[in-house]
Length: 433
Ligand SMILES: *Cc1c(COP(=O)(O)O)cnc(C)c1O
Image 1: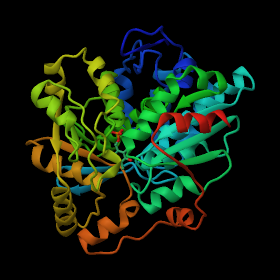
Image 2: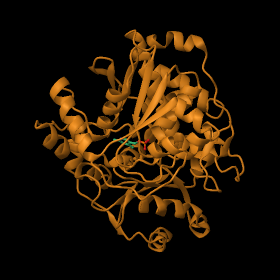
Image 3: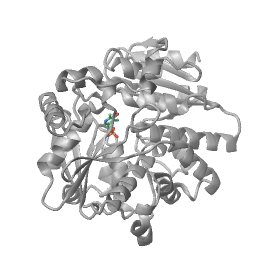
Image 4: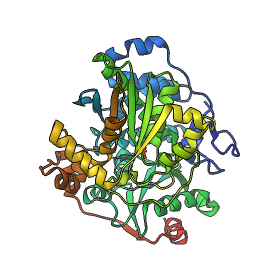
């Protein structure tokens, strides 16, 4: 399979090249040249398959031309060593719990899958060490760091905004050591992302070391997230509830919903999608006006979605050839203030007993407001509520237990490198490595 750039000014790439480069030379995002539809029989029988079996079929459609089948199966089964349950929250509204991975984040799947795929290519090729740069507003860093931890031949630099991620999040990527270096940037998430993007464009740096990204712009990170949506359909089908499925994705960089849209293009029977946002309403405004106007990100209590210029918008735009009508007829939007998010968490807990995290709350609320007669709604619960313990507890007035896996990270010692937001500083630091 060849991959083209959304900016159409860079040469086509192989999967290997697309994974290693992350961003195309013209700053565009890689897109697969074709998206293979899956056969009707697959969907007819999907409710009898496990999450792993479903994912392997989907993975073959994406990567089967480029990865040996046995190795691909190993990568998929190694990545998905946990479940992805669909839980009823209230009538016709279900939570797709994407937080049962190693760091309790949905990004665990893409991160681990990418680490294993990159390792597969490095082993084929020889010895050169690969350096992964990743900017995080919280959850990406922990998922990537843990996905890559101990994978030989790869070093990871996690850039995060100083003081703007929760203690639990921070502990998940600053306490690991080994092949993981945490870089604490004096700025906001967009500054971290800008440093990473500049590094990829810098010739001197790229001669010095082999760089790749693990942000959701990387095809190996965002595409595997499609597995979740096939699984959601399968589990709802088993309950006889899949006929008019509406999928609602709390979105920041739009990688997760973009993967869901790829699933739809492959034939996954989703009636329509909702992209739920916090106060960062760039996509919402695009849906209303047809104009994409990035802004500086705004800090909210759903901080993993504090993105003012969502990278994967370019992919969604490309997928529908820029046709605003096509996009708005399939996807609607929602945007919520912190106050509304709190209100929703409290109301949901009081009426249903289900504990939402601030991100999932955006999804739940959008479905509650927009679901129509006869439809079944599934929203992604993208993080375990314990990752936002203080916020959640103060809102619902009840205690949220910290799962053992999270508590273990908190016991480690923080190690990080302090950095300004100036590219020259970051570059000099990398040149000395
Ligand atoms: C990353 C993240 C999101 C946003 O996902 P995108 O793919 O960037 O749209 C939502 N919720 C949580 C908890 C996240 O970590």
